[in-house]
Image (cartoon, rainbow, N blue to C red; front, top):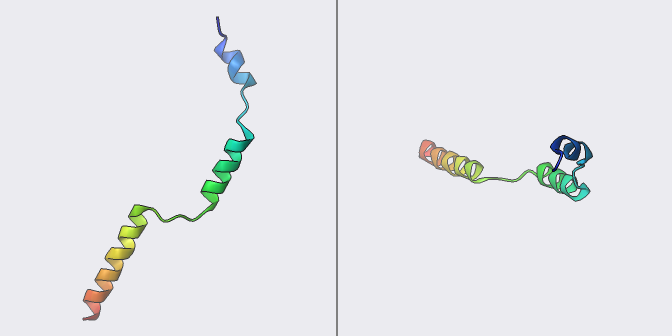
Length: 50
């Protein structure tokens, strides 16, 4: 039978996973919410300027 506590003590995250996390989180990526905010903001600016 597996001893889950012992297995958890032996667990170490993969180095590649940590590298991938760093690469993903270090980039400033625009998501759909950011894109919608920009589009709405531009539309509002145009309407205010007319």
